[in-house]
Length: 371
Image 1: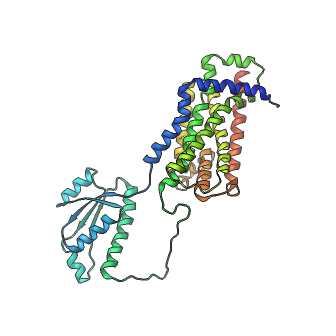
Image 2: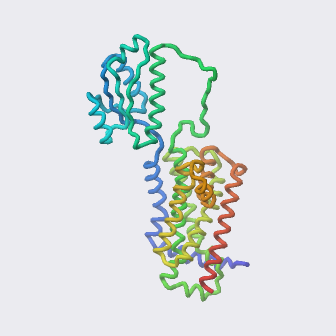
Image 3: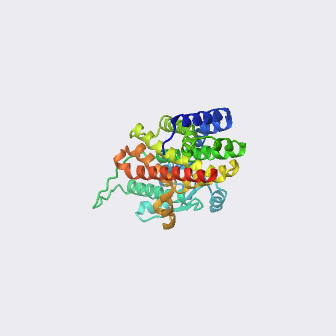
């Protein structure tokens, strides 16, 4: 079916004027990505350091003080204070003041001098299982370092494993959170924006006027998408600039490729919003459906926060229909690994198929409404 470019241009112009005259929608389109990026970037982190710690030193020797200094100087633990009883440890952990408590026995230095094995008590707040698990690894490493320093002997293992971290050498969680955040934020914003386009025409009573014109359904949908596509692309560029310049996330890959693949994701998301708008027919219902269908899947099931491989098998299968899953992979691949299109062919193809399918579905659903 041939489309008339002049009619598409007319619809796009009309929609652009409506967006410009609606300061709330314009502010949401331009400011919300920035606000959400700052909120989520600072609120979500998997870096565990400065763990609040209390110490019950019953030995009070130079050896016990050296051990406490290792914890304090590691940068992973913040020794808040010394306590005098186990009851104070209970109160500190129960009240949430401390996540870790270290209890050094009174015969600590004596056993060390004799060369005997000595145990120290470590109490952890298991209500935060992630912090507790990581803190346990830190504690074991510090204990091994202290033991080596005491005995002055380093045992050479049969296998010398040398670790080299690729793509995120400093292991900063922000470096992989920010790219995923861009996918989540854009999924929400573009779906919310376009979910109101058709429903707004019904609410204002102007849909009948559009129906009576010779404009075709694809022309109407494309025309309505154009202003929001431009806004979405501008938001994507703004998010990338904030991520690289302000949050210092490395962008190893091609910016042009990143924008091209983002455009495919934007188009699919915008068509999803239009489909929701056609089905819902009221702005309130459309916005609610758009929020639920965009934010929750993009946040929970895209691999942004939780590894898909750790999810139950039914949920893993369900994630294949979540477009944000593929966009998160693309963003992390281009940002951190510098992947080119050759390594992202599958994700690109699936995003493209999704965009086409949703566009066709929106056309058919709207055609049914005006028949």
